[in-house]
Amino acid sequence: MMTQLKGALWPTLETTVRGVEIARAGWGSPEALAAVQTLDVPAIWLCNEQTGGLPAVVQRTLVSNGAVDTVTLNGAAVGARWADAHADYVLLTGVLPTDLSAPREAQAASVFENIEAALQSVGFGFHDVVRTWLYLDKLLEWYDPFNRVRDAFFESRRVFGGFVPASTGIGSANTTGSAIIAGALAMRPKPGAAVTRGMLDSPLQCPALDYRSSFSRAAEIVTPEGRTVFVSGTASIAFGGETAHVGDPEKQIALTMDVVSAILATRRMTLRDTSRAIAYIKRPEYRPLWQRWLADHGLPADLAQEVIADVCRDDLLFEIELDAVSRRA
Image (tube, rainbow, N blue to C red):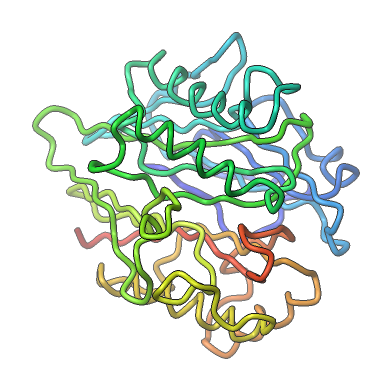
């Protein structure tokens, strides 16, 4: 079972936790990150000039029990492989393009190829991927070309027509200076195990594939122990694919959370089943609106870690990604 710590800030990383840490991701100014960066586990370190004075935000991913094997690519640790009673898993963190000086589109293609190569090195394939995280420097300048690169890779690997992973695509630089850095979660059931995975629709939105953005709205893994739902990065997008409530961050937050709640409701879950969430907020001054929404709905202020970052459209002011777990299969 994978345990992902939610909500808390970990500026010193000294908090005692149970389980084996397998990955780390941090957001903040280069100065804030300098105090928390570590090389003991694969990591993604993301930086943004518009941090709004926030301290470094660090997310730590742990496996609750069992042996963990390191996944390497070109001599560098990029992930972990582990298993439970029902399935084998791989979490890749901090996958980079091979040539950091290549054009942006070439770097994007290389990242997908390197995700595949890392998975293949431990007997997995890209078709086992359930979810991806894609962080693009200056995303608003090249999101469309990036999508064409992803489309071409998915076409070549016959992803379309099969399982299209859930995903987050966010604008952020990283401490390596690459145009893109990525992560991925893959799962493969053990022979004979009662494990399924599926793509989930959004009752309030059309499929992202309808407007050529190659990800599913959410994905789920169901085992005899329960259900885990991975909600993709979700923003204020109307059913037809257009941005809703342009210029109104309060209404964008409300619609975004309505969309997430509707997805969870299809699995008999609510926001109170959240196990991990990250709220991407375009400007620091929108944070109080997000906190007020949480308070108005009786939810904890630390439901999600808060990161200042660009979303895939300049007029989208808020996005959230969220995992939820229910012991009801």
